[in-house]
Figure (cartoon, rainbow, N blue to C red):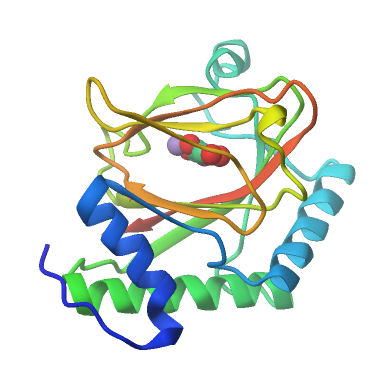
Length: 208
Ligand code: OGA
Ligand code: MN
């Protein structure tokens, strides 16, 4: 990937994510989404959860609930790309601006995206995995934004990124923090929190 840094302050968070990915295989940024939008998204998610409007991922013909919960325990809800919810719109606009920047500065060729809310109940986890499916290689980059209020290291719930055989990086799911990495390269794992639930928006930048 080619890459030319830009001094535009609006895009400094984009730079942080991209430079991180290019230099250390993942980028993160603590204010990719502004606090008001994070709070609005958190309220949305908790409302959906309380209404029973979130479901285990991958429901389908071959879905095996028992087997699935041994791998991942979160429940999800997809965000509609044409949502009229103001907080979802602001989130998706930010994502689209990032995609434009990534395509212009790195010729990434991203032409689609998908995002879902995710709720991990206390003690639930997502075992080590890759985000790109063997059968469908459309997912190029993973982008996860956390919605938790006042997360402490003692709450656990860290994301481990396995960068190669020996190098592991851990990030806590602090509200507003966004993590960015390649979906076909970086194995990662969500550890359980034993003190509280853990909420996020996880998504993928795609080339289809
Ligand atoms: C995922 C995932 C990471 C996280 O949803 O595929 O790996 O930290 N999420 O929530
Ligand atoms: Mn993942």
